Image (cartoon, rainbow, N blue to C red; front, side, top):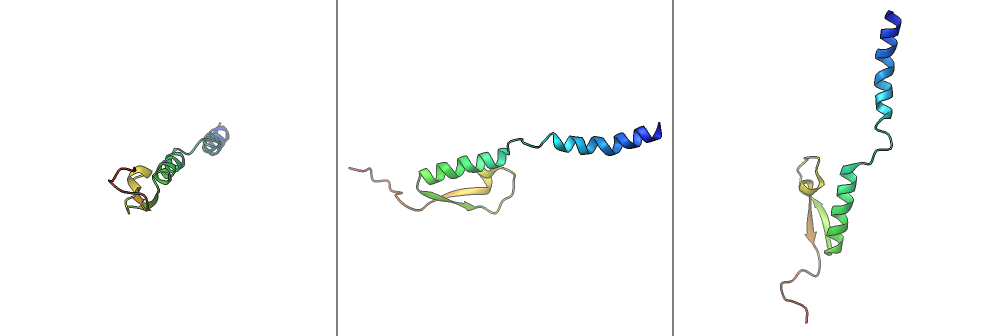
Amino acid sequence: MRILILSAAVVLPLLSGCGSMGATNSYQQDLNALEAACTRDQGILTPTGVQTGRPQTEYACKITGGATRIPPR
């Protein structure tokens, strides 16, 4: 009986690690979307220095070109 309990204590944590394999990384997806939006606006992502686990607060979009308030003619 002890062997069964000990083997379950060893095997179950190993199996639970396999449950997360193949899952999509939402942080990376959010970062990719943020980078695409920033690039579309002719900017580059710059780190803010804050670590929150959310790319929207960890990075700021610095506009490098085409930023003007004068409308195109």
